[in-house]
Image (cartoon, rainbow, N blue to C red; front, side, top):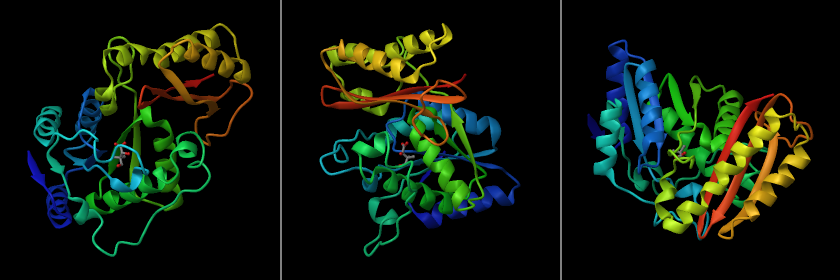
Length: 281
Ligand code: PAF
């Protein structure tokens, strides 16, 4: 497996694969890969002959005071995981390669980017859609794979692809969880042992909420209230949001019916974690 750092190199490598008649699958990441990323790469490999993984901690999607500088990075370990999962090439550009001096162009999806995570992370999705569209132009993949843990990110990217007529298929992939239910995330490494235990309140609340829906609770207001109360029983947890929304538009709903997303963002100590479940009711 190769690692390349420039736009010219990744373009040449993908062009060669295409010339050989290979379909190209793309997994954009910020690195510090875990089993969740590995599952995306495996899926990409199962559906395409050539798989590109990008590893780039994108400064434009981090706000002031967020963890851009401290975000975990380990290219050697990432290369092993990516190669084992089936990647053909890693694209690992520098910040200067992606945002050269004088850079001025941004992609901004309106509306759905200002709720949920967008409400407490202004500018975050502008950074995500900008880097993802740049990467799509560079890699020119047939399909791109994203984890459903970042449900809003998936919805925003799907909206961007529709609106800008991008010729790429977005493939959302299921959340991968630790054995005890915690959704896998590179940021889980920030948690100390008691925070790691406290973090289970997210998945536990979602699973219980799912059980309540299965037993006939369809009032989104009541369910949202119950989830908040339940999270507040954990002393280390501080709620950023609990939202029950339409999974495509991210509009708040009153009745749990149709394609529903229950999404949470909760601070455990200093670490902000997100989790969600998506259900067809
Ligand atoms: O989900 C992520 O890791 C990032 O937001 C992405 C899509 C790689 C863009 O930087």
